Image (cartoon, rainbow, N blue to C red; front, side, top):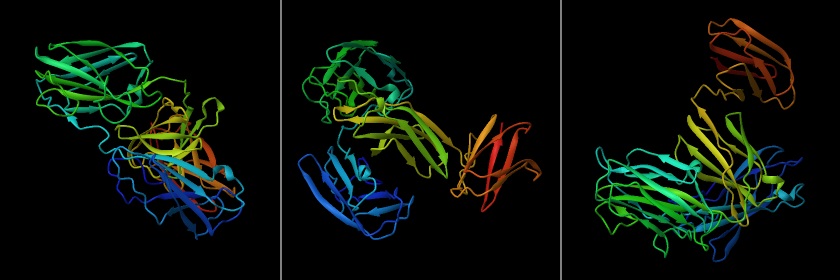
Length: 425
């Protein structure tokens, strides 16, 4: 499903747009697809759309339903189920897709301090295996960083230490955890700590209650303020700082996906991973971060692969979680890809990886009919420095050999002509 996606700007008239893939052996058209949407009070729909365009074998088609979805309720999770109604489908197992979309507006109240040069701020937070050194800011949101997720066991105390920089004698700190995941910090037992006034460090034990949600991302908020015994999790203060984290209370062990890998091809990032323990699962959440920002869910899928299309220049990070009936697993390993524009050279249906080239590189291009291609590499003066003939697949490997540092131009000649550029360091 292309849209909608979770966010804080969802409205009562959101387009529901899907991408269809014909994985069969014959072209298809004139069949129906439908979606239902459930906000927890009962499903609406189905809403049906007839696909009139022809989808050839191996091709994609993007389709927008005529009926829009109302996703305007703040804090609400909507379960959208997409179904293909193609009669006689060769693979009916992939005819249903379920995606959870949340309207995140109003989920957690706004909070900010006013730390500036010379004023107090939160310099370090440690708990369990986490130690987060940070600089001054008014608000810092670490809740989307899986490397800073805090894991607690029900009934087991974990020591939390909050260390300040530029502290004052009237400073104090407080901690809240949204144990029931309802989007606020005001329920009984959620204000887990208020420090005495002083310069710190502030040390306390955090214990998850038995009725806390398990295997779910819960929000923890730490606030530093000055001379304010009525410290509150919301609003703006004249001093101090606010930091948000994610807490996960363990329950039944939910294994994460493993062996997350990526491949660059035809301008896209192709992700693949292994199912945890070979289990059949309802699906996976794909988390994405752009230019080192917070991770957010961009897709819920049932397969063990995902294609991120036409990435922009910049830093792209991904991780995957497994979604069980009991909850969501911890994160898989994180993969990181940096695009600098020409460096990745995924133009004209050709990809070169790694680039810059170290010892060797893999060249991939579109050649589904296994035509014969010849590869030519030229230096920046146009001189041919390497050849490789009679390539019949869609992939070949080039070795650095005696090529010196610099920029090189690559050309594949055959049924078509593919050109690109690579660098040797």
